[in-house]
Image (cartoon, rainbow, N blue to C red; front, side):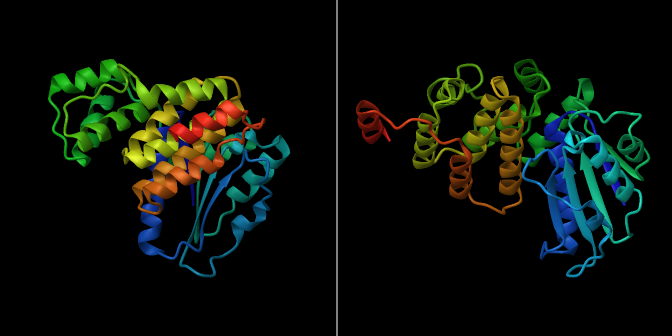
Length: 287
């Protein structure tokens, strides 16, 4: 069966994919027939005919495909052919943040998918219901005024809203100041990313780990900083997707906080120049 997730809100898309994974893992806890394919990854080499293979180690297969719209047109047509002939034991969930061309074969196949999930940006009452639902999951009770305040501060940026609600739940405060006054490390993330100072950014992450900062807050602020930079769109998309996977792994309990920070740090680009003496002394002193 093909599940087409249509829309541009990456947070809602990740939530939908997380639910699909949880449903699959409830029946297939070994995860041996679960695969996540990022079609826009240059290192990905996939034989799409494998979509028609039958499961060997579980009762069914779940294959998540993202970024299919980045594939060359000929490869999109090949993917569409196999998506139209999936065996009953295979579920493919496909999401592209950019709309697929309506006249393309892949776009037509997705529009006819038996199951479709909309992840268009939320507005109005739908956004308010989402905020209340997320608050309830964190054991928070929000008044109408608090919901309105959150809406005014963050709009429909669900990543920022999720970070704020998590911060409130962990600190037991009605509001936080990280978005109003992004001082300290939060502002440092933005500065270091803008300057491509990877060494300093890694240092900030290590200090956050030693202070025991909530990992969800660190991931959320770092993701917001990455979405603000516009210098390298390809890296921005890849880094945001990677942080989304980290966030998903944390929510599912697949990785711990220390592991998450180590993974993030390891995926940052390496400094292009060796540090001069004063830089080494600075980081030895303050790291």
